[in-house]
Image: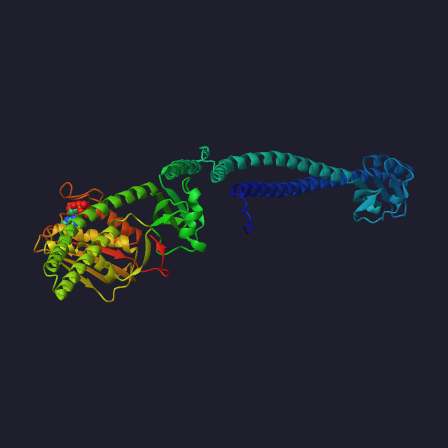
Length: 578
Ligand code: ADP
């Protein structure tokens, strides 16, 4: 999965935005305050020091006026030295070139003091490493200039104190402010982050999660909506879990094996019954990973068990798939085989009734021919002719009994092969023709020359046609009955090559109610002892085993038409088991 950079959370972003804005404001405020206070304090102090220096210079100038006039240098020196206590230094320069200098009673003055220029203009100086404010005052009558140096150290230290005080208060404000900001940011963003946490937990499958309802109205609405949503999800998940369990239990409880496969035969689901059959079912339905077309409707396992196969298109993970249901019908198959035999014997019985009747004719002929031959033994030619007739009669009887025996014989393993439709029709008509003749019922055959070969087990398929003809014979009136048996090419699902047989009669037809039940086993409208109700159900099973369909079109008074549709012959037709 490609790496996706996570966007910063809204709450985290908001919190940091608030903190950064607060810090910037605080720093700007602190610098402004610092600048303002420092500037004012410095200016005020500076002015005060300057005034003090000027006052001192003026006072000294007054005091010195007389001694200077008198040339009393000792007093001048005394005054300068005494007053120098009130400042950093005092420097008096007379026009006569005398310099009196003192620094804090210190006399003689330090050399650094004497190096200060004797001009009147104030000059910024540094004295003994300290910044000085130098104030000068001229003595009256040009008696000289007094320079007073006042230390600016108090200004510097006051400024430092102010800076420290401002920095300290800024730090305190910063700490308090940040705490407040964190608290405030938490107040605003906490409900949002709780909601975010709840959403994350929900997305991880914790469906019991709920969002707290604290905070402002918008957030409350958001939390309520979230909780409604979570409840809906919980409900849907519970429903889908219940549905999943029900489906699972249903599938496991079904008396059929169920497989769900992808189009390439990959098994996506198999219930307990299906698991032991999976390999065999996949071999039959997806040989080599490709689906078989058309899909078989019946399968026989290597162990000899029979399965009815039902398939349906389903969606598997958004892709088309196939649901395969295998119903074990081995017992039904065995029962049905037994019923089949019963039906076969019943039909054979019906057929043989006609046959017994029909055998009488050649038997009569034989008897008459033999009688005639016996009466005129000298007429060799006549005797030979009569014997020939008798032999023909015997052959006819032999053919009839062989056909009957063949029909009634117990089931061999049915094998499908390609047979002309006309042959199947001839065989079936031959079996019922004696009976039809006895009742003067016409059976017409119409075989379209374009008909494809029938790919069937001839014995069982003949039985289907015989069943349909016997029913038609039973339905039509003697003397007026007409039955038509047809074969023609047809199409199934748009595919050509299919074959369609039809057996229609001009009997009374069936009501919709009867027509809807005729294929059910044991359904009969015939008198007790005449009908078993098995003929059509057996016929439909046989046709189904051939991959075909047996249907009926009938209405009261219009006769009936039974239609057998067989699918196109597969590519390798010979020797396939039904
Ligand atoms: P059976 O012939 O032993 O009654 P079938 O399964 O062959 O059993 O037929 C079931 C029923 O279908 C018949 O009893 C009859 O009522 C009805 N049936 C079948 N074929 C025809 C037909 N050609 N015309 C009218 N009814 C028919």
